[in-house]
Structures are given as C-alpha cells and as structure tokens.
Image (cartoon, rainbow, N blue to C red; front, side, top):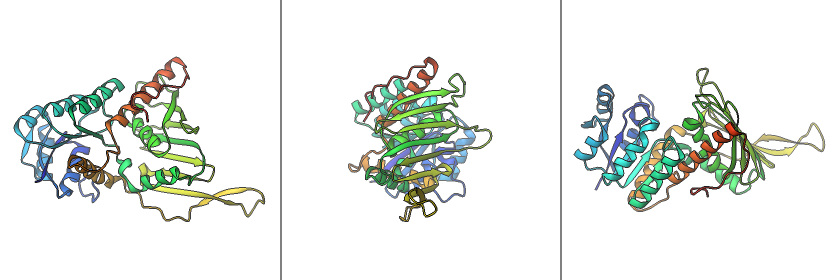
Length: 332
C-alpha cells in the first residue's frame, strides 16, 4: 500500500525550487522520488502557484486551502511549506484531520510558546512531527558530527558562523545545526543589532561542552551566506557555500618554525556535501517512521528548543542580561 502524501504551500520549497535541478530541492520532489509514496494532493491560495505545481508534479487534486484538502482527500503524511506565521494553523489542522506524520518547514512556529504547544499536541495525538532542517540528514554533516563526538577535533574551543535573513527565520537553522554538530547551547546573547526590526543580529554563544561561539549576520541584499566553522585542539572543520563545501584540517608540526604546530588539510576521505539532496533522505526517514522504523533526527522538540534559544538571545540583547538560561523542556 502506498503512503499518501500532500503538500501545503506550492511555493519554492513546496515544489518550485527544483526546475531543472537534479537534486531534491523541494518536498514534492522528495515524495515523487520515493517509490513507497504517492503525492496525491496539494493546496495554495494562489491559483497560478497551484497550476504550476499541478503541471510540474502531475498532481490532479489541488485545493485553495488545507481545510478543503483534508476534507476531500485521504492523506497519511503532509508537508507544511507555508509562510512562517501560517505553520501553526496548518499543523493543528493536520492533527485534527488525523494525519499521522507532519514535516514542517523551519521555523516550526514564530514563537517558542507556539512551537512547544505544537510539540505537545503532536505527542498527545501520536503524530510524528519533523522539521525541515535538511543538514541533519546530509551525510557529510553527519560524518563531521560523528567525527567531533569521537574526539576527532579534540576539545572543541570555538564555533563561529554567518547567516542572513533574520535570527528567527534563518538564524534558527544555524542554531539547530550547531547544536546538532557540537553540543547544547547554554547561553545566547544578542550583542549588536538588538533593536533592528529585521532581527539581523550578532549573537554570542556559550555551549554546554565549554566552547564559546558567535553568529554574525550579513546583509541579505548584498548576498546570501550560511557558514559554520568549528575549531578544536586537534583540528578544524568548516562548512561554507550554504553547506555544499566541507573543509577539514588536522594539526601537524610546522616545518618552518620548530616547536610550533599548524593546521593542514585532513588526509581523511570525506563525503562530498549535497545539502540540496538531503531533503530526499529526510522525507524518506519520516516515511520510515510512519511505517514503524527509524528515528526522528530532526524533531519538533529540537525545533522548539531552537526557538527558546532565539528568544532568550533577543531578550538578553534588549536587557543586557547574561545569566545562563535554563535547559527548557526540550533541552537535551
């Protein structure tokens, strides 16, 4: 029996990103590529968006809103690919309709309180809730995470990065990734730009393993950037080009200066990053959960914790408070 999937929101991440790309850049593409799944329906209030989606993906059942979709179609798994402020309503409607697996784009909700409520609702209803943090499913990122956990970088000293698009909307993805790769974040404080309406802010971080960190906003109008750079006592790892480029260095004796050491490119063979195709693995993993196996590596609970950290950072930036924040209900 096929797993019946639907997509709420027919924009870029819902189905429009793919175009001529060979990677699974959208939820529609991920479902189409899984032989266990039948993409049966989608919805969007924009008539032109619906028409493009239907033509591109061969979906006959198209609706103007998710209430009509859930009323008229039997669905097992749904992807929520709407604007951020519409996520909570779509997730709640999916739970009420009896959907058993939901994949929501990030952030799970605009506020930590809303995100926590959605997590609890899904728990109480027996619904698998995942959030589309693609890098958690990407093999190169997973390999670096394992390498760090095994002590490959030694003691992690610093975790630094760059992002654009607002701390709540895109910064949450960097925070999620840093927690995934390194450790829980205990303290986050906005150190500049706290009063900007765009929330393009710089953040100082303290990790549970003792590492310090920083997250710096760039100007989205100039260019996009998403990087994370991890420094340890035995080496360094950096993802750049939105995660599509991985560089790893190891420590060696510096032949130029006796008694000193330097970083040199790692001799280890690393997977080639492919963030654009990670969504395929993620959606397949959620289908596995629906069918009774696997693990939710990008859970709603983790996404709710990300929003707790975002809001704590913004609040501290306004008040100047620097006390360590509580681990929260969704801390590890």
